[in-house]
Image 1 (cartoon, rainbow, N blue to C red):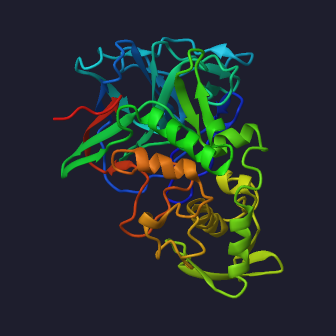
Image 2: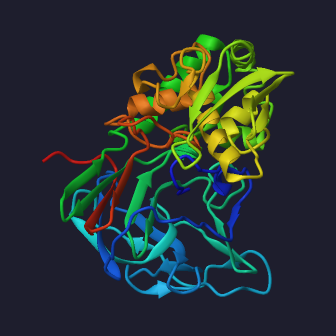
Length: 407
């Protein structure tokens, strides 16, 4: 899911049922004029010679209509609204990539909002269409999904008339290594993504954490019929389908936070026009005077980031929700009452009970970057960990599936 910084909501793809997406808006944050199309090089280093790419999103130049690129990598396809749910996509939108290590496949990216570049290894993906049209995307958590046995993943991007913004994401799950390299008129931006064997590294660490604290981290791992690791779900994805997962896991920590801020001010920089606000806990509520209050959240709410008390009716409370949820996932509120300006990314996830999935993901990626929970784009100055590329004047984007090659 693509967002403005600190205002991310949980992805519909995190549901344990097929994700039906009817809109994925993103507001541009930079100024400039981009070309009508952008060359994108897709590179396969997976070790498999059978890899497909898909490009999906909404066309901002055509009423935000749903659009895919067809198999030639340049022709737009607009799925019509069917008369019944679960209709086939209606066009071949599987873009075959070159053999592993055999060069790149260049596609032509038009303006696209809320876009994704998907990759699958060995088999094509199944996308379906519901009336609307609404696109039924592959689900990482639903064992009945037609793509359940396929190894697949995606990166996210928006390309509009003002900028290119893209990021790698682990908000829903970890699977294929995906890396980004953006060339611009002023240089190059790179996000390294997972290294070779990154999924297995993550799964091994999740199993070790489960053995250490007796909790549900190993239950995030999805394996194939042959026992190999297919993906590792995030706790918010997994718990959306089974809210008994991690029940009470963070309760003692959250209780300590609520106790601390009964007698200590919590200062939050909204990093927006509302400036800095200060709150305290009273009568069980974390209250920011003249703004609003937060009830004490459950572990599920912290990992999910989009259920009460992180559901709000105005933008300022939504902004505070992002910063509070980020600090609770990173378990930094006992040490830092100045959010997020006083944060040090090196101190994230230091509590024995924390979002260990996010900790492990950041420890595994080549440069420590990549969204690991829905508000992982909240950060202090010079502390960005979200794994993005962004430019008003992009010239070429390279997306590598599989570990990046040296040289």
